[in-house]
Length: 139
Image 1 (cartoon, rainbow, N blue to C red):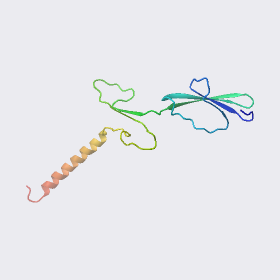
Image 2 (spheres, rainbow, N blue to C red):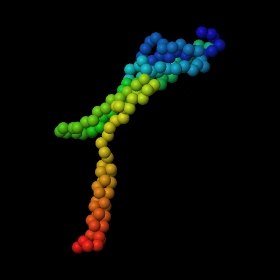
Image 3 (cartoon, rainbow, N blue to C red):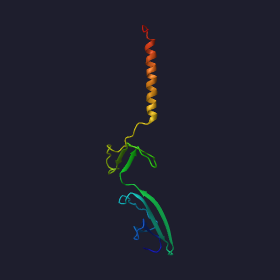
């Protein structure tokens, strides 16, 4: 490398060999598709033209694998007995075509929707009964 620019060495996690050795300033694409899912640390060591070093660590999480959705059990729940679970796993695919099957997680109907349906059915029954008894010739 030339001596008029600073250089940086990129290390991933606890690797001893650098992932890349670059001259600054640099813009590059960091491909995380080959990394395992989970937490990683990118360590950047810079060397100035005078030989001084600087270190910066950036912690990040890779989530390239299929998303996993679980309904019926949350983090730190206290449970007993039989537990009905709905589990779905889906991937982004090849990003060139959209596959609709499996791309959305089905969910149960929220309680507030059931309350609205019951209230509407009650109102409709009340309205129907009062309207029916107001017709001429009935009672």
